[in-house]
Amino acid sequence: MAVLKILVVDDEPGIRSGVSRIMSNFHVTYPFMDEDYSFEVLEAADGESGIVIIDREIPDIVLLDNKLPGIQGVDVLEYIHERKYDIVVAMITSYASLDVAIKATRNGATDFIPKPFTPQELKSSIENITKQLYLKRITEKLKQDGKKLRYQFLSVLSHELKAPLNALEGYLRMMQEKQAGDRIDDYTNHIERSLQRIQGMRNLIMDLLDFTKIRLERKEEKIQEVNLAEMASGAIVTVQPYAIQMEVHFNLDVRSDSVIMADPEDMEIIFNNLVSNAVKYNKFGGRVDITINGNESEAILTFADSGIGISESDRENLFTEFVRIKNERTRNITGSGLGLSIVKKVVELYHGTIKVESTPDVGSVFTVRLPRKTII
Image (cartoon, one colour):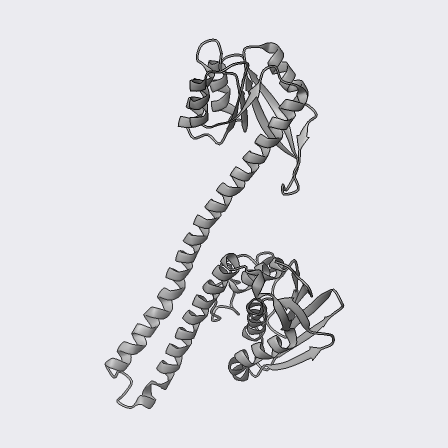
């Protein structure tokens, strides 16, 4: 249970002790909150003492009387406003002029509690204030996460695109200067490496577009019947050229009804990423077994490979955005570090789950469970 600090600034001892008594065993909960909130009450008999406590404790909520000895409540409110403290302020007062009310509202007061108040009136106000505070902080967190995400996008783009662009420039200059000879066949290796670099950049851009899409384009009208067996076959065809190079063989086993209600583009994201990874991180001459199973309520998809596997420590961050597993075996494997985080977000969007079991040098098994009928 989280604890919110309430500072009561009032020159009447009865008001301060009354708030402490009412809040002592009170807690607030809403269905959308992660946890319940209880309260710790601090007291100040005048504005000057209140400011000292505000600077020292940074309370979450201030219940502020306007008519105080010394500086007035609106002055304390203005002090909080100027310093941009993350504090919700409610004025508790028996009377207030229209001018005072307007000034208090302009400086951020969110509520007015009449004096004297009943326990239920105070509890009702605190419930509303707690909800406001929770939603405000969630909004701020989302804004900060958005800034962080934009920074990560730029960092990934600058880092991941810089290397292939430099390599492409180098290969083109070698051909321009005919460093390897005069015949086009002398540059077969350079052309092949250039195409690989271009494909890597294309994959990165597509990952970024997928990542943006699942955050911004959730539309119920896109939900329709999707045949997962057909999705699996399509993903296999897409990655087949690379699988042939790796001599990786596929086995698709459809054991139950493979139709669910979903957005086809979302299902493509899941299959393309997991099938591609199963080949990319496989061993030369390995195999990939894709199984579609389930029951009336859910579809169960497994993607098993005979690849290099994932250590237990690496599995902890496997689905984190922009995280790539780096070791000797993955050094030459390109990627954005977004694929699995995108898959996880799509799966969770459908209230499904994704889990991984893996043994280094043996292989990995990704298991996805999706409801057959989902309303996003």
